Length: 252
Image 1 (cartoon, rainbow, N blue to C red):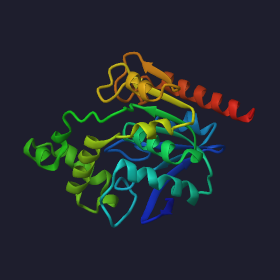
Image 2: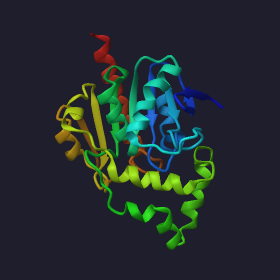
Image 3: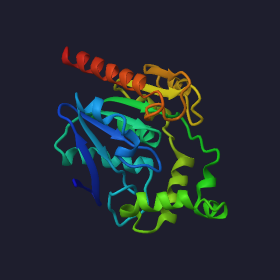
Image 4: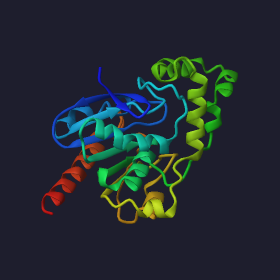
């Protein structure tokens, strides 16, 4: 299984397809492929699709268990460097959308376009403390704990409490881009949110990114790109957006 050496990390990733690089950035509590299983086949027909496990997540290994969305964004240019990639399209879901915004703002030359799914303009932290280790134990939510423990075992090496605490901390504090950071996002952007997404909306993102294209998925929730949700229409809209960006860039 492939690993890339990135600063203090051995970053696990999976790769499918050929062509221009397309970097998929996963959500909290998830890892590379789990957040995008419904995108592998349609997108890998056109792009070199990369699915890394973030710092602190999945099968990525590091001695330091601390992480944040901003720190993960700083890892991504070095991950691309390790694979010999100068620039990539970026698709981020939930936490991955925040990472994508930080990445596009701070490293604009590395991001050809940005798609956010279930993104937000500010933290939506209602209920996050219910996922702290002590709260999960108090409510006897052992299935959730076991999933977190096993899914991210390589990353936290058995310290699932720190993993869950770091996740809640990140949930409470991100995204927190300054006005200048939002303005620094210069690439084409598509924001996708479900109509009933409790963690963000197209409208709030449009206020921060007035040039962005927005797509509100009718009847959708936080993860409209998942299998069993509005996957076909979301995939089609994103693929059309990427193709349009590629056509425009080829004429420059």
